[in-house]
Image: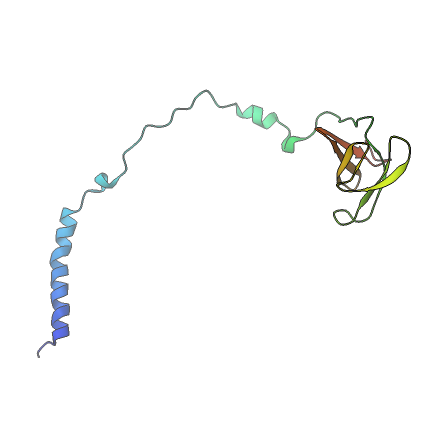
Length: 138
């Protein structure tokens, strides 16, 4: 039984592979040589804060002191419409008149930034004011 030219080529390739494999294993570097060099551990500057201090802090930054509304902030009379869609705040201005404000509009220097179900949030420069709805528990 004679081998074809293709079969002879495959046999020669397998013979070369059979001879080369043990040589590659014998000449391969040791696993220790492949390891990255060990670097010294980083030094910690100072001491970390004690865990007790972290556990003593209020969760979610709870407010511990009562916030007071500035006296010249607009007084909230009510909120009409759907929040985050078309809600407007009914406010009483410094001169005693009332008007409606959409988010982004201003009165007496105070700009209405947001509305909640029970309050309106105003800003003037760096001042912020949360004006509660009349009758709420604030």
